[in-house]
Length: 454
Image (cartoon, rainbow, N blue to C red; front, side, top):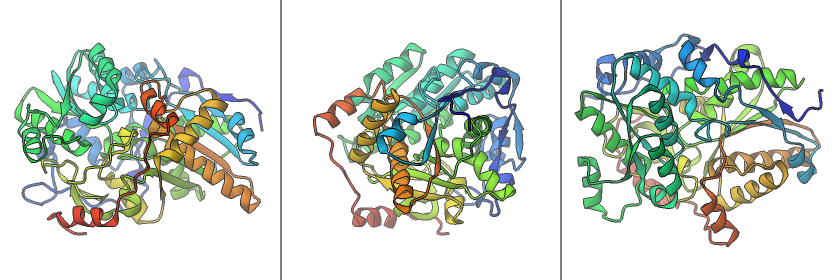
């Protein structure tokens, strides 16, 4: 094997197509249902929220979808992103396993999110849309969409979960710098927000609530469309540029992963790195283990129920077949704001149900400990979300050593933590509290669902 630390690609090697895993899945996800009629949704049902090209991508079963030249040209600002062999981390762990990471923190927004923000803004611009509304948890998605909208001359309005709005002010400033309007959610600007505040004036907010507010704005304004940063099929597909590049980089390194790992919020990060490798399992006879890592405070994959549920809190979005904790579930305000979502995308949920992928949950103190070890050995301060992947990498490497085997492990370092230093400050001061959701809380949240069972 070539012993280089950094494995790079040329600009000409940026993928020309996105990979659509729906083409290869043995069991396709069940269809989304209309929130009112509970019947499968059609293109006309989604048209008030999304441009038609994205709706076509959402329902497509074509294996490859061409990336527009204009999108690919913008990708070249930061893509291809580098892959590294984590020699420093390997040495610190004393492991015989090999660890690689794909680093998405080199994008303008500092995370993987522009991979879908740019094409979403592009397709909206192509259809003459002048404004996009969206939600954001920790701010990575809001930052990415603000950046993309600025490039295409589109107005951007962001509803940011209150706990992150107050705890990560520079994410808000970043969005403002790219011209976006940012509101703390729940807000008094929408009926959905006012409803939540009437129930709990001190609500910390949630991604489900912020989605309700952003969807409402789009639904009530003809010149506005809605954009989502995770969960939906087309979003996950756009992110596969990560894994497609990683396949080429692993080949250049003369290696191939036994295990591929990524943090999990709604699925875009996980899908981006794993889906092109899972294609090798589904069609090429490989046996790669793909592991999604979520926080113990929001464990939809590991402790949720598989059933139809709303993607938002108020019930304005289509019903999605997903692993969920219930759309009314309010996660503990941990610092990995991008992972504080009650449900999982339909594709990832079906893959988990079919045993094609695995999922683990880890508490935040173990994750921050892993983040500190990584920053001290590899020189990059990871976002709190990314530390979940690192913690699982450490677990897998230690387990392999215990079994006396060497594994090749690849994970997606989805973003840097430069805007999350207050979280590290609290960890270093010993002020972070681990929170594992009591089963009775999950049961109570799921009991409130009146959505179709699966």
